[in-house]
Image (cartoon, rainbow, N blue to C red; front, top):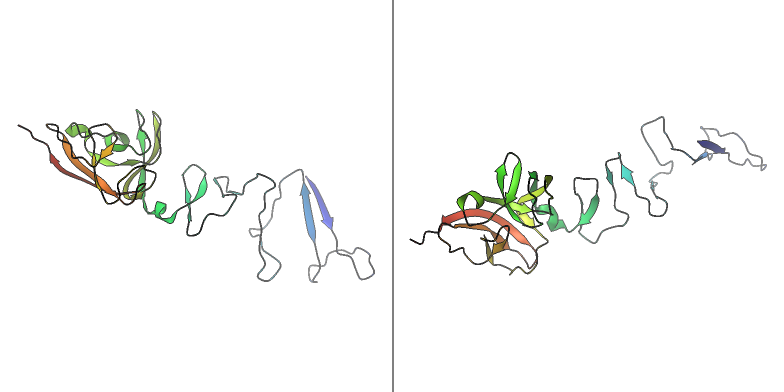
Length: 216
């Protein structure tokens, strides 16, 4: 690491040593290594001064080797959210209203699938065809690969759907993972409400088992 100290010019134009008690300029430049501070604070010398972290080119600002900050500002009223894997991004404020819990999935599930708890800390794709698979508890917020893990949202508003009918009531379908405005009618199928469409892309999650279909 190369350390270069730049001195302030005196009144006669001759460089002079920095005097910490005077209003003088002391600057350091670092080349070929990391900048380390003996203290615990990075403070602006100017009253009400800003501290700007500006990476070069496509670089990012990384915090505590844990997550990266976005390279650009978000839109009005958006909030910062994390995916839990080091990526922080701006999302619409209503996206932060969802309540999710991380689960494992032995077989994997598709993004926005309805799931049920099928084992210890494990979820599988739900469907209304049988009692065992109809115990819906939430929606997958992103695809989860086989033997992987990911967020399952079980309350609040979840975005990312397509073609929902606003204000319509949705039920767990007999097609694994899907939802429908049609109530299942097959013998011994379960009628499980999963929520109400807030818009064409948003589901207000409200899961409730209503009845089991009996056609005999």
